Length: 159
Image 1 (tube, rainbow, N blue to C red):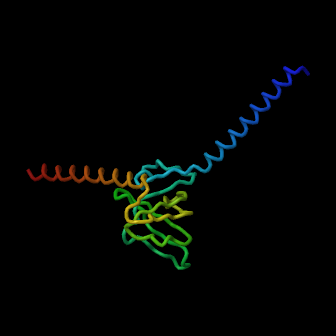
Image 2: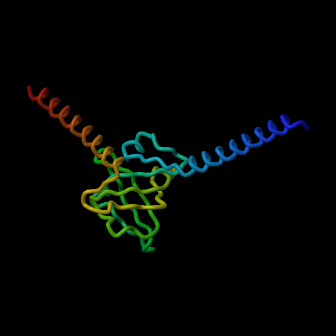
Image 3: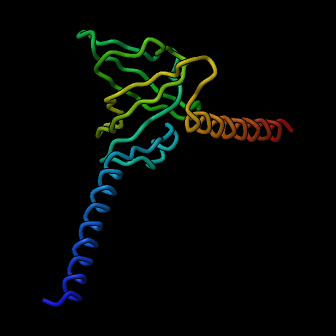
């Protein structure tokens, strides 16, 4: 084997190793990537059915129900336009309350219930994850448009 062939072989081996390392890093990144969805997006079937994702919004008032085992909690996450039922088995954060922001990680079951593996509550009065804040703003805008259209329709029928 000539020195030139040896250098070419080493270069090809180095490129192969770099390619394998890059593939492993990208695969690990893709498997750990978890997207955020609002209840409106989940209702519109934009969320993945077979992968884990984050669901964010507000805990609907009056929706928290604890089951007999003391560890399972059912509640509803809303963005003020749509609601998604959630079931979680485990200890909830101390700041978890009705009407407060929440981000849950998990999957959807066949019935449309979000089965959470992790629940995070907002940590103070001013913080909300940017994705959750954006989703709430969008839902609020939709609600305003619908209310104004409804009011216009009522005015039309009164004439």
